[in-house]
Amino acid sequence: MKFCSECGSEVTKGIPEGDNRERHICTHCGIVHYQNPKMVTGTIPVWEDKVLLCRRAIEPRRGLWTLPAGFMENNESTQEGALRETLEEANARVCIEQLYTTFNLPLISQVYLLFRARLQSLDFHPGSESLEVALFREDEVPWEELAFPVVRETLKLFFTDRQAGQYVHRVGDIYWESRRSGEYQVTMLQEGC
Ligand code: ZN
Image (tube, rainbow, N blue to C red; front, top):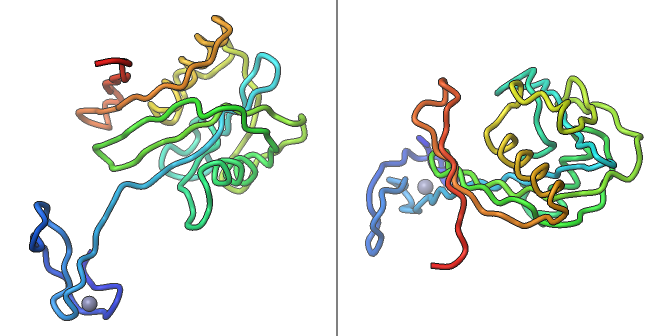
């Protein structure tokens, strides 16, 4: 951030009184511009024993497969955002069944909320952000061509739970040393202290 969104003057970095973190502060009007994590919301659309995935038409990770998800808009709920993204990316209508995974990505200040959802019909087709939309059984999932760790981890949990016949909401943190290597670490919240 270089300029104040309130008055257009330059901003400087500093710790406001009573705070303990560096913030962008306007040199003219003094307003403190707080920056907080972004929420990403989406669905795992399910049809019989298959899940719907979208092949990305946009960067980052163009050409790779993902679950329909995206940044929440102002003035909508997480469920509304998830339904909107599913409609935008796959032109698919779903019925939400459960908040399934919550993944924290502290290194990029994002939180993913993915809902398990039932696909209402086989009437779907790619939106402008997708090259292709398709249904995959577990053994058909393009595991090596998934766009994001959060998608891979959510799908792994989903198919394991599916086998067990019980879906449990889970919370996890994802970290990586270098995003280029593709390697990452996942820590799932263990219930209890
Ligand atoms: Zn200002």
